[in-house]
Amino acid sequence: MNIMLGLVLIVGPFVLIEALLARFEVMIYAAGWRTPVKHLPARIPYARGAAATPAPHSYLVYLDGIGKRRFGDTRDGGQLVHAILDTAPEFRVLGQIQPYSPLAVPLGSRPIWVWLRRRIGIVLFLHNVVQVFVAADRRYRPLYNQAVGVQISDQLRQAGYVPDSGVPVVLLSYSGGAQVATGAAAELRAQLRAPLILINVGGFHNGANSLAGVYRVHELTSRFDRISRVGRWVFPQRWRIAWFGSWNRALRNGEVHVHGLEPATHVGPRSYISAATVLPDGRTPLERTTQLVVSIIRSDVAALHAAANPASASPGA
Image (cartoon, rainbow, N blue to C red; front, side, top):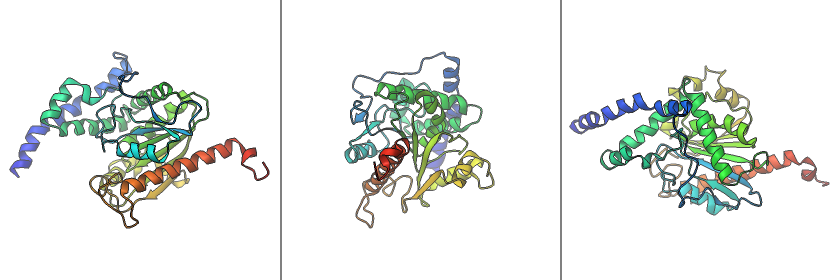
């Protein structure tokens, strides 16, 4: 009890300050007082995997969960991204997007946050948690969606993506990254005119963002994922009675494909991206998730190509 009280007394003030200040970054973006970061440090590649030319099979943009604080992949040491690259070398993969910063500034490079990380590491996670709720807030959501959509499109161009090329773009998100992915989709379509595929792993999102123009949405979930379940009841737009909401309408129309990954949990040794547990079929959760993600992308991209080139897909072609 004393430990919990001490934690509340230490962390509480930071949570209050963060709750008051979290919205300011998106307001700074809207006012144009600071220019969003567009270029990466020299040591960070704009993409990995397949070369930009000739056009790769698809571009995959990974939007990490609340552990994201640097340009590098941080939540799981980059295991999911590395596993996808090893399994599908034909993909061109971007893992540097900052989902929780409208200005695209890594949290780990801000002096005050470096100081806090050394003393109260949990505050870093709380910052990104609050940013998820800012992204979901109807007052700031349009600006936040635009900011991250522009960030992703800029990074894709730097990685070699050519607008109107028809090459599919996959937004693969984890946890709160789903809020950002569903929100950025409209801006991304406007910027690049690209076919979009969304894959949410343990998605935590409010279900209010429009999915118009998205080719397919895949929800990888588990009934043992408590955090994802919290997202389904904390946001009224995802309640069953909100039948008019974007997410529920997409579910009803069969536009969202749900994939159950029991007994996966959100975090820990049984999480979707854990390599520490072996499932009954002999695979680790990381291997199972990787194989499903790759299979989904290959199948959807093949369907997109077939739809765009019906003559070549016919038996007599």
